[in-house]
Image (cartoon, rainbow, N blue to C red):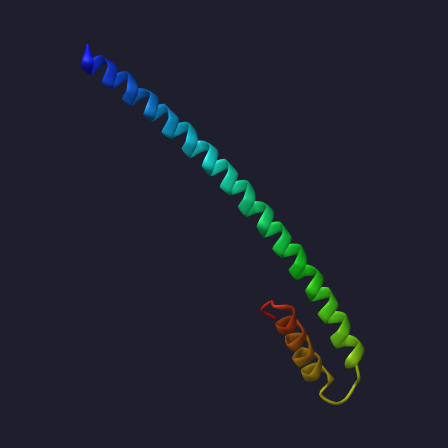
Length: 85
């Protein structure tokens, strides 16, 4: 009788652990996706803002190093925004 009670208790604990693991996986996955989306949209906005700034500071010219200066301005802007260029 005692071992039957122990087996039932172990079964309940096992079911609880399986359900808890599934809930934890789903919750963690949803949170990670939301975080990734927020980060991505923030990076996209920063990229657009930095491209616009770099192009306005160093417009296209036929001669000179405007391209290199524009790249440097873009990289500096992205670094200030906290993202890799």
